[in-house]
Length: 114
Image 1 (cartoon, one colour):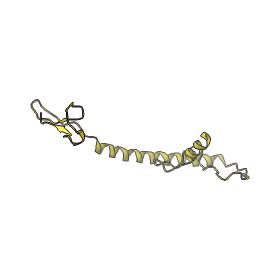
Image 2 (cartoon, helix red, strand yellow):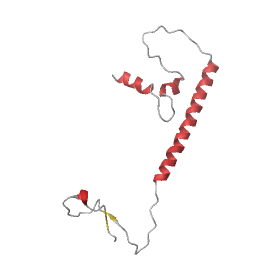
Image 3 (cartoon, one colour):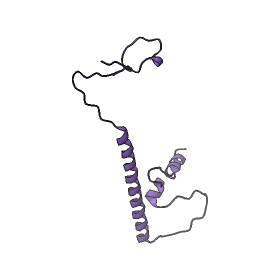
Image 4 (cartoon, one colour):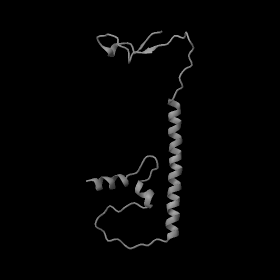
């Protein structure tokens, strides 16, 4: 079953590029209707190279766009630690504190201020 799984994965469209890995590597989608007589086709080398270069340029542009979107999303979420001075009051997370309660679900999430 591994070859069929590999074939299915390589023929599926990815979210990042919108193309299948098979198409990115070979610039065509594999035939899925078996058995079929295949016509012998020998494409001109320049056309093939031009097509491969255009597909790779498209993938590079799409991946850069995806990377920019992901970095914008990540940068929104990442927060810098607040600057604190000696004597400031802080709240402690009760996640690692050993406090006896009947139900930790109903306990305070933060303890303090300390």
